[in-house]
Amino acid sequence: TTLIVNASDASSRPIPETLFGIFFEEINHAGAGGLWAELVSNRGFEAGGPNTPSNIDPWSIIGNESLINVETDRTSCFDRNKVALRLEVSCDSKGDNVCPADGVGVYNPGFWGMNIEQGKKYKVVFYVRTTESLNLTVSLTGSNGVGSLASSVITGSALNFSNWTKVETLLVAEATNHNSRLQLTTTNKGVIWLDQVSAMPLDTYKGHGFRTELVEMLAALKPRFIRFPGGCFVEGEWLRNAFRWKASIGPWEERPGHFGDVWMYWTDDGLGYFEFLQLAEDLGALPIWVFNNGVSHNDQVDTSAVLPLVQEALDGIEFARGDPTSNWGSLRAAMGHPEPFDLRYVAVGNEDCGKKNYRGNYLKFYSAIKSTYPDIQIISNCDGSSRPLDHPADMYDYHVYTNANDMFSRANTFDQTSRNGPKAFVSEYAVTGKDAGTGSLLAALAEAGFLIGLEKNSDVVHMASYAPLFVNANDRRWNPDAIVFNSFQLYGTPSYWVQLFFSESSGATLLSTSLQGTSSNSIVASAITFQNSANKQNYIRIKVVNFGTSTVNLKISLDGLENSFQLSGSTRTVLTSANVMDENSFSQPKKVVPIQSLLQNAGKDMNVTVPPRSFTSFDLLKE
Ligand code: AHR
Image 1 (cartoon, rainbow, N blue to C red):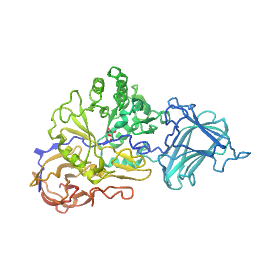
Image 2 (image 1 turned 30 degrees about the horizontal axis):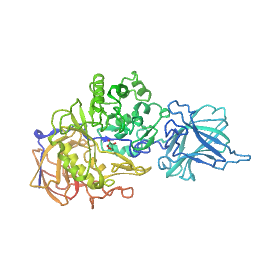
Image 3 (image 1 turned 60 degrees about the vertical axis):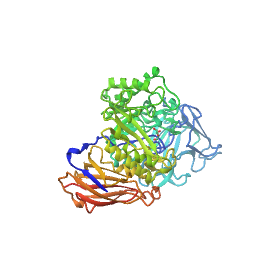
Image 4 (image 1 turned 90 degrees about the vertical axis):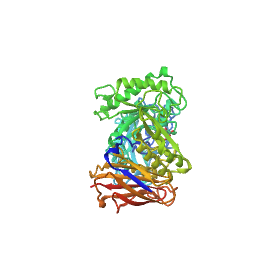
């Protein structure tokens, strides 16, 4: 089999700068208990919404009923989240009813245990008021309350704390425990109210509150865009539970939080609209904001009544990129970002095309946004890959979840798509079901084939992102996912590693390729030239997926190339494994990862062997 790569300029074509990016959805505790580094779960005691008594899970009480009574009331100093925790302590440091030496109070185990690491600093912030003098111990301990990792004692007279008071304390961990909890305890009789209890590691990505090692996994992909915050999360099972950007901005203490009823968990919305925009900026990726268009899974706003939502979207755009003196832009500036964020794309809804009110609602959003912000690119939920859209749009969503064979065959999906009209945004793709397990090599290889097809069709496909991006292993709502983590561990599934092979493709130059001398349809290949941003050197990258079960002896011929190669700097990177259903895991995080070696015979004509069930890239360093 011969792969002919035409490296002459005449047949090459630029790949859009935006081709490969990421899609972040608040699913599987991807954000709350994941990317967002907040350690406390339900920090405002607000889970369960405005109801009193509120759902205070996962907070628990330390001490029995004869010593402490804990309930919620609606006396918080924060208007949008009135629930506060009231602790009535009946024991004391002396007298008839003496408190246990460690005190009574409450603890929060975080999201399946807090990861506390020796030498690291943790900022604990909370709001408190009391009827008596305050003597409150704030500590990080083991999961059963034993073994203090760090603590500080907050004291003051009743006068100091008779009104709500913000307390901040910095804890430095003396030991490591991946399954810790935060405790607030006292040995003083009296009533204490607590609200908005937060514990954050001081060390977060660029100091912006993101869990560093998780963002580093994203940064390695060099994503050119980030679509957020969902998915179904944006729609909600019911409109009342959809993500509403205005409730997710401003001081974190004042955010009401909400219950995401599709993926069935509460989020305090510490990772809100502003933070998503900040994350995009920190990654050097363009933000793509998906907003609710008045359609959820089970209810819809009539097009005649959708204008308030249209205004909400316009306000959201103004918040992101309006002048710092504008109504909503000033709020962004107050949050520490006077410069506008680079918002150029919005998506009207998610997977709503077939729903009754979608087109009517969409058109209202489209015309209002285009007339106020003509440059904003608007993404429709209706698939235009096989026939033209019946409404105006700059791009359209294309989602595909399927088995491995079907995904691999979809490398050709966009071959027949009209070259005119809106461009495709493959905003969600993944192999699912038994071929994928919780992240198999088989799934990843099929996706590699599909992505090669997208790269070759990047004149009509302008963006692509895998879904879902993250899963906290303690709350697998969806399989598979690209990055798996718990409180302290993480690994990429083979599907994550496949994306890394495409990290240089956005903005690169596509070379034309043809496979000859084979009737097999289990091989696909593409070639690009790009400049490595780190060493500024030029490379040709040839990617080959062998989806079949036999080794392929491949001759690669480079036509039309004047330059020769530096043998020393050319490499081969292979993703394969002994069994096609192999997966990575916390115990074997690198079972299926790309392995790089030097390519000894780099040249205009190369004979290479491509292993069965593999994805290989040949990086040829041009002289
Ligand atoms: O990626 C998981 C879900 O799949 C998304 O929320 C939704 O858009 C799709 O159905």
